[in-house]
Image 1 (cartoon, helix red, strand yellow):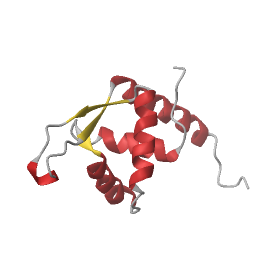
Image 2 (cartoon, helix red, strand yellow):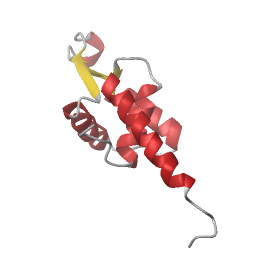
Image 3 (cartoon, helix red, strand yellow):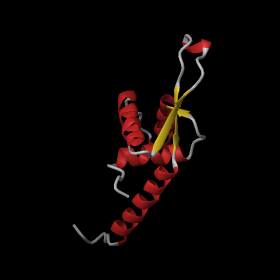
Image 4 (cartoon, helix red, strand yellow):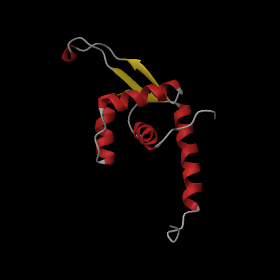
Length: 107
């Protein structure tokens, strides 16, 4: 795969998305990340990473129907793709290899 995950935040965001139903909003994803990690990322950081993941075809988005509760505005909903699941699996394999060679005695 020519594209890969670029770091812990991309990986954590994508892994969190994989545990949620398809069609999650950025703000719902932010809440899930806060629950999972104990940290609340900035909204801008989430949407920047979502755009990058969408460009890599690891996530896809669609625009929801406008809602009166949002003043008639629609939400963009995101879902992980098969390529995103594959990227997580490849990241996990590489991490397992790296951690498999780790020894607490090394400094």
